[in-house]
Image (cartoon, rainbow, N blue to C red; front, top):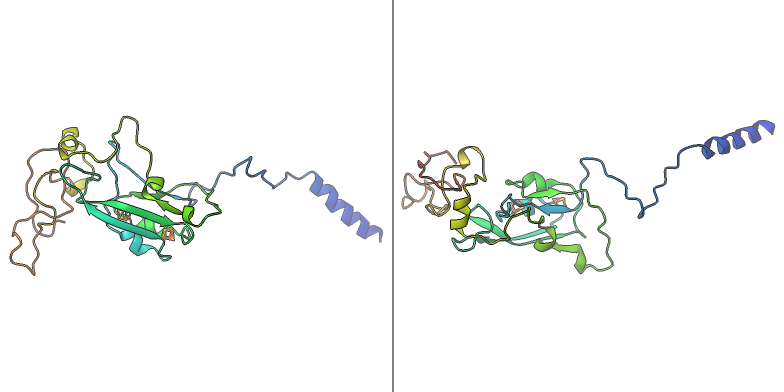
Length: 211
Ligand code: SF4
Ligand code: SF4
């Protein structure tokens, strides 16, 4: 009997002097682990151009069918991204998303990344569908909102893609004009879509298989 009391009060006494594990949320927000998967961000380049090229790879990679992307062509007068296409409509349904991160693995331009933001609760289903405006990163200081014109992008002289991707200027031959072995009508020495240099200068056309 005495032993049981000693054990019980001993446990109470020890617990009284332990550090509390409870966080006073929401007054105190807990800092997530560095690789925590929070809500998504659609990133921009330093001049404000969007990194999303509307390729839909993120949507295809998503196991929960949570992403909707509608791509559209950039034009010389209205350029949103350095690529041939941009994400005209972009939505993520957070009622479906399981925060697995497969979409950001699939994104070829690192347009899509995940933040540490976890406060996503809402009392309306509609507000859980985040649109492009809600997902877009803020404009960097001094950057211009999209769309830009090809002339002003070329004048900046920025290189948006590293390595062999930096070999063609905006305003050059159409990016879709690469050689298709099944279609003899396509040019023999054509330029692939991945060989795009932004920022001016004459360039050599790449050889086959370079893209
Ligand atoms: S984190 Fe996973 S579930 Fe959520 S949108 Fe990306 S791929 Fe889909
Ligand atoms: S976010 Fe990335 S993967 Fe998704 S459409 Fe844009 S560029 Fe493609």
